Image (spheres, rainbow, N blue to C red):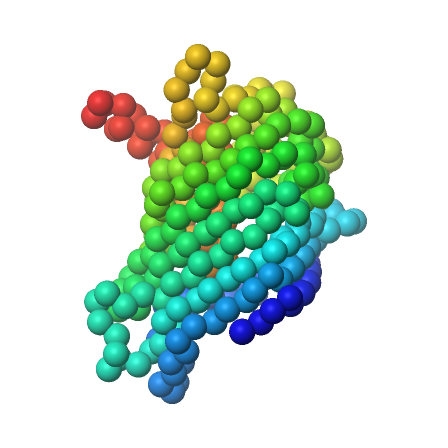
Length: 264
């Protein structure tokens, strides 16, 4: 058990990553330990996490912090004598984002699934999105001038290669602005679509649900980058659903929307 711990993580992504790097999924990490190991539970209570990240052309890191962090992990084991089809490595986590908005995530990793199948759910209270500017302006080159939002995810599932599902991202009066046009232009990563929209002065859908309308459901479709961590995989899959809600859909998401509409 850890109580009142403080974690400070700072990553510098301005340097190229080794092309042959491969990051294992959690299930494979556990099962590949070269000796039999069982840990009944791991707990972190009332702790603090600060995360910072430098990206290309960043003079300052993008930062976000979490207070009141509580995390529990269960069934950390590779002992095949006690594992069956129902055994899962499970993580429950809750905290306050920037000391304001409570959120919780629950992740499930079945230990006998060789395809590394997993699923997760998440909930958050409403957050004033402008509090995320220390993160977005230095990593994404955008500034949130106003808006509030909350996340509601019943289930997003994935495996070694792909995460899919649906989610609800409710928000109101969202307005974005370019903080650094050059940084937005050179961004070739996951956020490139939203950068292109901003640079070309396209408007996002600023409310969900719209006035006198129904909630727009976000469709999740994200292909795993095997050089990145499981935390990155979960976060980017969630972001794909949030961007879908705001009107930014990949070719695969547009196809799924058409199929869902034709099935109605």
